[in-house]
Image (tube, rainbow, N blue to C red; front, top):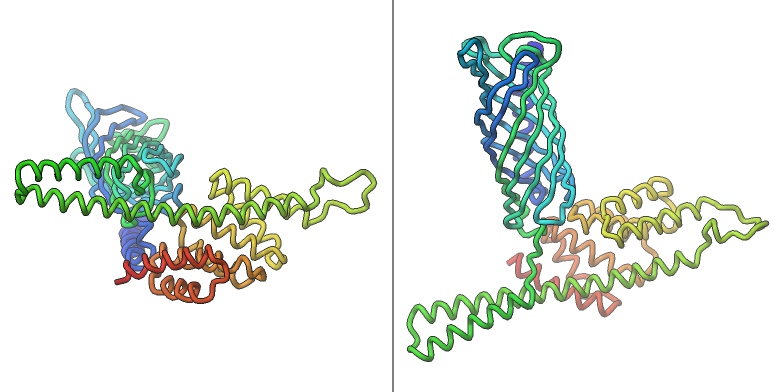
Amino acid sequence: MLREGDMKRIPLIILALIIFWFSALFGGIQDKLGVGFSVTTQKLFGDTRNGDFNYGGNPLVLRYNWRPSVYFETEFGYGQLSTDVLGRSLDTNLYTVGGKIGYRLFHRNRLTPLVYLGLGAMNFKVGNGQRHWDGYGLAGTGAEFFATPSIGLNLTADFRYTTGDDFDGSRVGAGKDAFFNLGAGLNFYFGAGHERGASHLADAAEMDDAAARFEQVGADARAGGASPEAAADVEELRSEQQRLLRQIEEREDHLRLLELKAEILQQELGNLQQQVHPEDTAPGDERAFDVDDDLTLRFQNGLALYQAQHFDRAASTFEAILVSAPSHPEAATWWYWLGESRFAEEAFHEAAAAFERALSLNRDRNRSGLIRLMLALSRWKGGDTARAYTDLEELVRSAREDGVKALALEYLAKVKMEWN
């Protein structure tokens, strides 16, 4: 059971969590934040007796998506447990505040399994007794389904193990008490518009469907005269077609950007194949396997992970290389691929910081345009629209590569439209 000094700290901890979350909401990382609620049911597993399922809820759940696959969550909840004692029901009501760290197994899918661990504190009363504070640890699993890019529905199940031993009605046994908790909830993510599952881009089937509906409405209008309802339908479908066309243009820009990146990636892999690997060293060769060979192999491994879309592991590999050789002549290249990995993870602030370092160290004039473009896009996606606009304007004026310049013009128009 928690001590008196610990009890006094709990309201301060709760206040600090709320202040952090709201300051983050208005502090430039709102695209990583979410808020939600859930309904729950609990069942007591004491060391002296067990109970029945009762209902509760978490009216406030605050989530911070530290990485696309890793999140931190704080919940404020209420629950109720009941068990039979000598033919009578003994009820326990409890208020909880807890924190979790969770991992999404397939964060790019609309439906993703979850696993999580956490700690918390609860204030509870058994029957007509006094209220007490206690702590608990939890381990659980579940799944989340993204109905839209900003709305997630989740189901969870976890086992919560108390630090005290009187949770089952002040009856002390050989072990601690515990309870099983099931939950169903909804989360709203402020980073709406970022991909968290289903692609927001249109495909040809959608376009064909919109065109068919447009033609049908037009035929109906010609056959029976243009009624106000038909005119409204035509306007609605015309707007839908325009939306789909814009989304197709976004896809084309995205593909052109990927083509530039693929070209750079192939160049990197070609250069690596020409460098010496330990298995290429002939017997009796005086040249020993040195630090540069090790860095080359690790960089090659990082690129392979990036190609396989293991972006978090690729970023960790590039970070480790930079820690071991921060002043190496190839550091600009490593910073660039660290930025690409973070950008692919939608960690746009970290991506912008990496591209800034790559640009400051870069000595390859043929690479500078793409680095500047990715820096501008990272700033734009991270919410710094003003700097992204300035970056793209300057890039349009000074870019040497035609492909980069054309893309910069396209993105400049999009940023300008959003800014206005």
